[in-house]
Image (cartoon, rainbow, N blue to C red):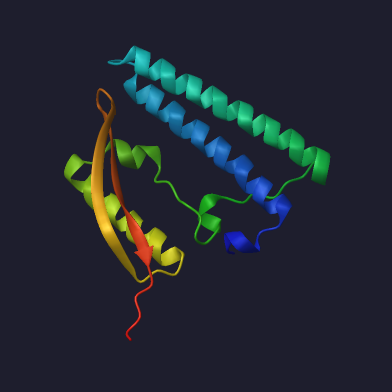
Length: 147
């Protein structure tokens, strides 16, 4: 299914499961950092608690609007919706592979919106905290046609 085809109740259900998944990811990060970087681990724990709060508010909203049962819809079920690698996969990723993964994700996202080229493509890397670096690949997705 495509995101634009989802109903309001399905979008809300997707948001609920995304919040739950994000909380798990943050707790995985906290566990992996706890021994050497206690303050960073505590930050990720707080982020997970915040995601839990978001999820509980979304569940309450869903119940008010649509009833008790909500369908299980995950990111990977929706074509064109952003996906996340499992945290155990990223923990073992070598820095030189992160750049290639960022590039491949950029291509996937561009194709998901119908683009056949990317212009002004760039990489960026930011140290989020000691031992944790994010790698970004970004550019402008376009459709190139022969004239």
